[in-house]
Image: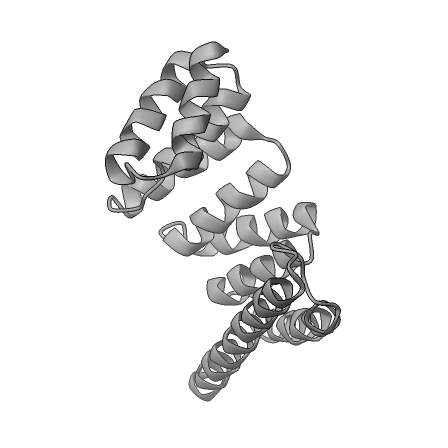
Length: 178
C-alpha cells in the first residue's frame, strides 16, 4: 500500500500536469482565435481522458483526498458542475483543510449560482489561507444576493488591492446604483 500511495501520487502529478497543459493550450488557442475564454476543440477532446484516468485513480484509492480534488477540477473544466461539487465534497470529507478543494468548491458553487453557499466556502478558504485574494469573488456573490452595502465594502477592499482595475471600478459603480 505504501508503494500504491507513491504510484498514486505520481499519477496525480502526471494528470495534474497534463490537465494544466490542456488549460494552457486552450487559453493559447483562444487567444490566437481572438475568442478569449473559449476552449480549443483539441483540448476539450483531451479533457475526458484526464477524467478517465482520475476515475481509475479514485477507484484504486478512494481514501485519497487529492484524487477527488483533481477529479473535481477536471469535471469543473468540463462544466459538469454537479458532479464536480460532489467530488469536491468527497475530497473535503477526507481532508477538510484543503485550501485548493475549498477554492474549487467555491468556484463551482458560483457557477451553479449558489452564491450564499459560495460565501460560506470563501469564508472557510480565507480561514485556511488568510492571504487569499477573495474580495472580488465575495463582492460578486454579495451583489448577486442583493446585499449591496456589503458588496460595496468588498469592492472597496478589492480596489485597495488592485486600484487600477477598470472592471472593479465599473462593478463598484454598478453596485452604487443598485
